Amino acid sequence: MSKKSRKKSSKTPSGSPTVKKKSAKTRASTQTRSAKTQRTPARKSAATIAKAGSHKAASKQLKSSKSASSAAAAKSGLKSGLAEGQKAPAFRLPRDGGDVVTLADYAGRKLVLFFYPRADTPGCTREAIDFTRLADAFAAAGTAVLGISADPLKAQEKFRDKHKLGVPLISDETHEMLEAYGTWGEKSMYGKSFLGILRTTILVGSDGKVARIWRNVRVDGHADEVLEAARSL
Image 1 (cartoon, rainbow, N blue to C red):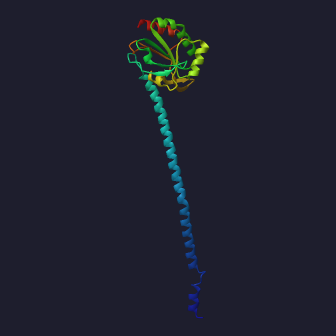
Image 2: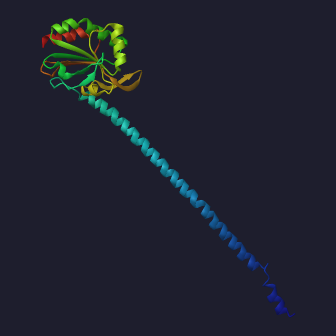
Image 3: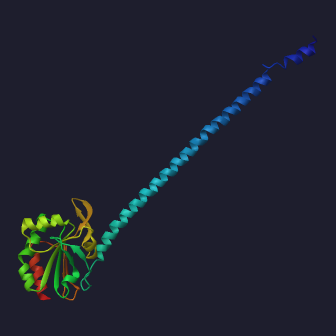
């Protein structure tokens, strides 16, 4: 074999440097495509997670804004609630004993509505007992008296029987009347804020209009003060 033939044959074997370089490049290219393929779902997954996170954050923000709006509405409702001289809002609610009471039942008469936070609690008990004590005096002044809270009827009846109360007790579990009369709003106790009944008394004149409003009532002597106001109408 000539020298030229040997030189040509030495450049063409399958294990030659040229073939090895091409093979290495092919493997590298394949690995690169494989890595890209693996990274792509990861990027999509990260984007999906980020999007889900943003939806959750938006949902929390919406709920927070709704809660803030509700609290603001309660505050504004209290400030812009019923005023003296306005017509008393109509109501139709159950009372102890199972009967239904409406504002129309007292047309042409004076009416005292005392709103108390909860049956059979110390302040509410003293207030209800005081109005019971003065029931005959109110009747002589041509004035009816009703107590209102959000307690269920059974609780109202138990409250009545336990303390021998002589005034009708209305149950407003849906807060319909409480809100209409501006007696449902924000309260605070032990540094915490919550919604509840604001101790309030409203005197409605025989013309059906609000004659007097007592807010943030202090129980001691209050029933006597309301009686004097009713007598003066």
